[in-house]
Length: 185
Image (cartoon, rainbow, N blue to C red; front, side, top):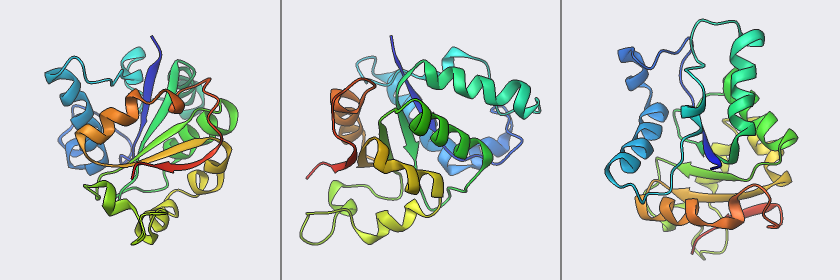
């Protein structure tokens, strides 16, 4: 079964068992997806991070960490990117997006944890993404500059909207969906 690769910012070096990890908000949002799946087996999240052991440890970047990130991405059908006010342009996030988008052409589902409803993402006419969303793209220039190469679905941090997005076959590897930005009205 193809997996969902979750990309999120955490300070480095990272240890999931350390208390500091849970202070990183983007990591907590990823944990929320895992909790939803744990409490509802029908929730369509299939965690690519389960395919290899922890990559954000004190291992060598080139010899261990980067190859493991790439292996997980190759086993994935899409990227779930958590993009929030807390996101920073880290080495790991840059590699995840660059390799996933520019090498593997994986579609992206962007979850905006600071936004709770579909309307929070859209301009007043509900015809385009608003400036708040677009400003967040600058937090991760590799995403901003590469997203035009693949289909990108933008969603708020809302369980049912995320469920719709994860079930949407247009945002999986191999779909024929045209590259560009998409959102639910």
